[in-house]
Length: 285
Image (tube, rainbow, N blue to C red; front, top):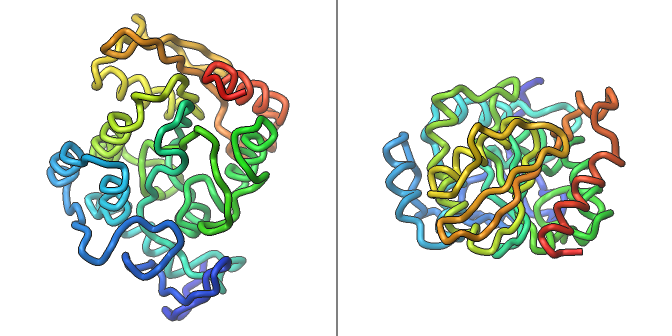
């Protein structure tokens, strides 16, 4: 990476000018926060404010301006300022990534964390990198997204009765958040599950990290979770139970990382097969 001057640059979809990182309330497409949105400064703030969030809009706004993890805040903003050469003419979002998709989903996808030059640049989860290219192409092929690709916030993409979350909301160095950073971010995830799970019938975990986070979060919400702990695998299946006794299916899928897709560990057929199964079990196909 190399440093470029801090100046306003045009958004690839709208042409509007933004500095990097993007300040809240400046017109970025789909951005949920305003200049008055409170910003969590530590783990205690995250725990308290996440528990208080009454709506997805409120939660997403506060997630998008969180500064509770100093290492992650410094990293995501450094990337936004220095940029990858291929994107040097674009503004970078450079902030945490809220969940995205249908606010009343039947299918919930669980990932790890934003990519430094993907979602951290575009402001939308799984957007602007090769993992996202694979994921959205599969969602479209299986009838769960309106477009075959997700290029940038504001491109018109929509998910159909589907929502995507990251376990950790900021891009971490080397794609590896620390245990402490995961714990600090966990209340945001717990709050989003609390708000969306009444309609969710299937959770599709992308990778071991998403699988483990799903089991932890379900248990914290009082769901029945099988014992011993279900093991992750591509196509793995576990039945969870809501506190009211309703079934929720947890499915496992290899993460569409470049490492997995370039080596053939995950193929388009493998990804589409699991995605189609998730859609079928959720009653979306």
